[in-house]
Length: 510
Ligand code: HXC
Image 1: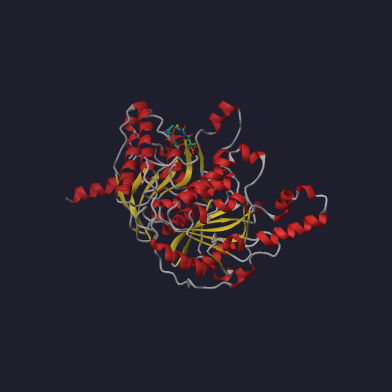
Image 2 (image 1 turned 45 degrees about the vertical axis):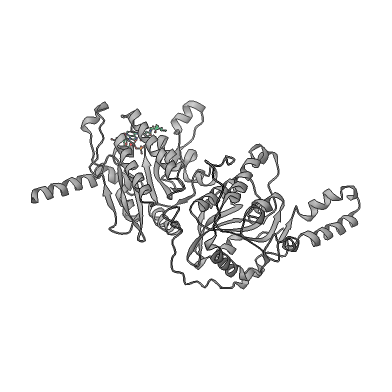
């Protein structure tokens, strides 16, 4: 018996070494942790249950028959994050460059199936060279099996992808279908085809970093939702994100103890909006002042910065925040901001996370670049997402809510439940100057008349009261009481029940 037990231990030790000491050293020399080290940091200590430690590939081509490594380049299993169950798979770059074989894929799909069956989040750690080249179509089939499960699980369990090294070819599409992608700066990159292929096909010369580094994907392409300095920071921040997320679409967001008084007033908010309506202010200051303990997890912080999206808590429960950012492009709605917010709203709605929207928007961004880029369709994505949402929606207009953007930004008309305005709100078709230039075009030569009419328009429309008279805003509130108002509205809306008519699925403008 002793020998048998010892054999198990010895087999396990071999498996834990992955591709061997030399490759582990090379991994460390690049500033990267190994798959198992990463899992240790991601999960609560001692909670990792590994499966399929001894799985091996079945390829016999190209000398592979005598190159077998237990585990076959991916470490899979489950554990907990602050006591809550999560499933995990981590590509092991030290084994065949983490490349995906048929058996490697089967290990991942087994974990995907378990995560879905037990309704728990799944986190994939990517650091790999794509399809196992020696296996050919068997590897491609494996990818397809993974992709299909990503889609089946979408909107049922949270799926998170952490890019911690190369992620190319077939490896990119599984992350692309998950809810969030995060990248490590300088050591990770993502692309469908690498620099050599790009050079051959298009004659462009680019480095991996220029083609698909963290900077590109967090600020240009919006493929990634955030980036971190190193493996450790990414794994700790992922633990923080998991704390905000529900385990599935039925359970509701986790509730953590909060010591922050939900009725807390913040007098400094009374002077947040500057006297001059064209002066910017930082909407994140408002978010940080209303959430529990100032704890806010921003999503896509570096992309379309005229829109802020992220998670906070009120009374210990997760809330999704969507806010125009007057500091960037005056908070205007453009294609990128609309798409960013639409995706976030849809995530929150799928997982029953209430949404708070802060509005200060001068309208949609004019111009050929926007129109040619499909602003109509991208703006419609956000309009569609809000109109379709059945979660509690609470909106606060802090300053401008002009034109179509007023409707889009979680107005009463598209289904928001509680709409507040600060006394500084200006709810109108457009700003006074633009409005007067159109209405009084014939009088443009008479500056006195134009000035008088501009003032007239400002007084009549650039306040929250016309909207309040019609019940389009439920109440004009003191800025300092915003947290209290939000907490009470969200508490009241906890039992909200709204169902959409049955259909196979909608046809949202993609
Ligand atoms: C088999 C692979 C591999 C792969 C890497 N390795 N990628 N083995 N299949 N796809 C092996 C290497 O042979 C090497 O083995 C070890 O992993 C480490 O790789 P290196 O090249 O030494 O590392 P590095 O210099 O860091 O380069 C990493 C890399 C490069 C950029 C990822 O390995 C690379 O370009 N690999 C091929 C990428 C690729 O073309 N993949 C196929 C994509 S097509 P030894 O034994 O020397 O340590 C695809 C189609 C799917 O994925 C589409 C589905 C929709």
